Amino acid sequence: MAFGPGGVERLEPEDKTTYPSRYVMKVFATCEVKHPHWTPGDWEARDDVSDFVWCLENRVNDSIHEEIFPGIETPHDAQEEATEPSDWNADSIRSTWLWNMQ
View: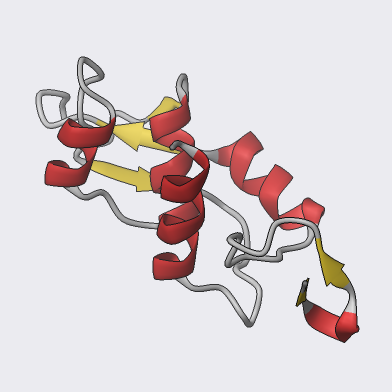
């Protein structure tokens, strides 16, 4: 049995993240990506899971993208308008989505 913030039992102990839904939904609603071949200033709303992942992490990792999301163009950059919670951690986000994609 695993416990999260406030001693609440975690239903998914492998999940290394516990963020407020308003934060996750703000990332989802405002996520944009830029691809290398686009002109400067060209951002496009997320249109697949990989875009959302990179917006949650606030970074793009080319080698991980090509391995995990084959056939989906790798964005050059990702951005969103949410304010990260105080316990936000990009490595924990990566661990969680990799676990859930198994």
